[in-house]
Length: 339
Image 1 (spheres, rainbow, N blue to C red):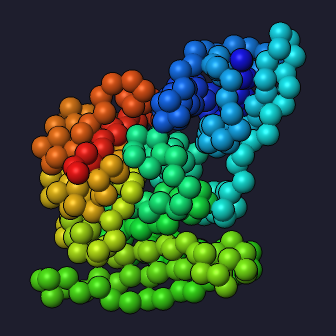
Image 2: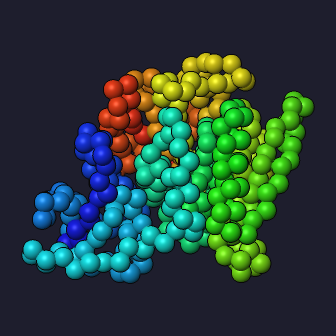
Image 3: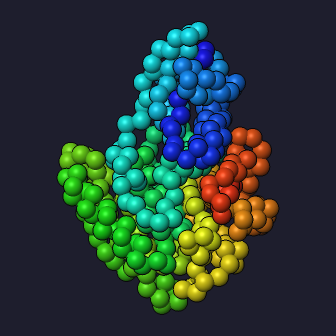
């Protein structure tokens, strides 16, 4: 069978070329999770570039999983020059605009963030589970990763030292929920660390329907103002299925530790042990970074030294792509294989 997948367009021609690479990698990762083998290649149909997937018969459950691909805008079964449209199972838990509406300088592309979530999930032991996962973004900024996770029906936990960014995420989400008339509850509380320090947390509990809220079928968003090196204490007993973070590129943002600017290597050296402890066995971590400001070999070694199993072979590798003059982005995926 030949599936023809139309990838979303992008105004930036050079980044559009990068999107083709990322769309291919995401598809490969999702197929790996399904246990499907397929031949993937690009072809032009009616002047449009399609990702062609040749594979065995795919059942509805497998197609439902694969059709959630972050970059697909149309899919069809190919028969010569004809395409039979296929339904995309992309019904979000919360509307996809949740991660798109809030605009700010240096914001990560929400489609790229969703791709990171899908690839990390595919690499984990939780790829095909039906229940909500918990996603932790250790340097969450204004919450793009968390909002993408909520749109997917997962729970989100974010930490950051930037009080202004967290405040904007908090205010935006509250207004978003009010605008869409979604039942929710917001709480603010203090988290006391062992050293006696206190962190401020804003926590939302939300459901996509009133009936679901009554039945306590809800999702949570936790925004924690604090240093990422205290992730284990801040999160508490809850452990995460996925850690997904787009690390500072050193262009608009610089890493901070304890309120002081420092190198990303220094920050990660302190933080990775905590990340390992908050990640469930079988969970996966995906970190994107600017190769001009952080060495991939250094990051791979740092993850290995902290007990992660880095996935260095296909399909969970080679995500390097150009973003802009000062940013060449790559991603490393690793797993917590402890029993």
